[in-house]
Length: 597
Image (cartoon, rainbow, N blue to C red; front, side, top):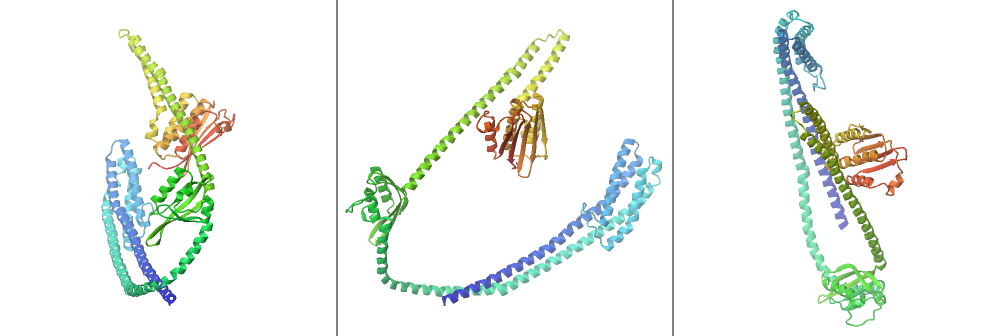
């Protein structure tokens, strides 16, 4: 009977599901069709608006042509006349293009070229006027003097008014036809709304209302089921007679657990009530009244205290975790132990202890933790060494900058001061020579300051981005060192990246080029940039003496490569180093692209 009712409920649910799917699908289809028709006619309206705009512009262009032609006839300056002719020619070409596009269509102007018969007849009427004006203006442009203009000016004056009137008529006709389309769209929208409302009404009458009735029937069945459940609860009291049988089965299960698991039953204060045979053998326990469990599990005072605290603190809520124990022979043991509170009777509460030996697993885990800590300590020591080297390098860089300023700019400023003090205003000739020397010294000082500031932070990097900064870097280094350093942007990369990404890329590239200049003894260096949708690639090639890359991998060659790797890892990029002795070196940087905006 229950299976039959369940099958009936499933069929009802499937029928309701199908009805709801049909209802929702019908509404969706009607909405899609409505949107299709409305969007189609809205697109037509957009093209109609464009047509009316272009047609209205034709009037303005004809007036502009007439005004420019009349200005041409009165212009005396030959240069202005040439410019005015060029302006008339451009206006005339646009006027002709728009006129032809209104009749035949033009995709670039958004003109469909689908005119009604009325508009076609109006264009047939205006075309002779248009051709007459067009040819007259062309003839004027071909003439070189005012005497050649006199035959065509009256024609233009006569035909312009007719063109404007007929063009007004065409624009008005376009407007009338566009309004008719809008009215038709309103009617279509009203029809679609009525159809949608009818669909909703039909779904209410044939789907939703019957569904509501079915739900009411289901609720009635649930109420009946509740009454039945109360009767079943009464019948459950009769099952208490089977409890004794279950108790016997539980005792049999308890005996089996004693033989296979480390199990025990204790009072909430820790006194042992029963301990399994396997537990007894494991800890060599001789049964005696009043023994506490923690005294059995360990011979070490600290471990006993810890186990006692765990049991007493969790006797109400239970607990599960790892416990350190010690066998009677003094061996270290680890137990995965669970404490489960339960009430065998209403007046009595006990704790069930279930444990398993995890000593081997724990020893292996502790060994792994030691190795992990050792590895972590080694990594931290390595990081400290790198940090120390970075700080030393920064101090060296600051010392170098101070020395450059003192030895270079400072000495030049001192020389400038002495030259200024040695000027004798009474000796004009020597004063002129001194002034020229001061100009040269000032230029040298400016050049030195620019070089120092460029090495610190190029303004192009923050103002214009990575590519302009790298381009200037190659030019400045080529000028300062005399090396042939070239820059090539293969894929016209011009995106802005995150500021930290850009400065790290710039510093890595600067380090690679400086290495090629200082150590590789190269005469030609090529810096090339290329990119795809997701990767920016920067390659630095030189024709220097090269080196053995295996020595670099083993840590030989200073901290420059280490700093480059640290920076490239910071921006989630990759660095590849390829070199052979006497065959040059290639450094490749691959950086994921995440644009600044």
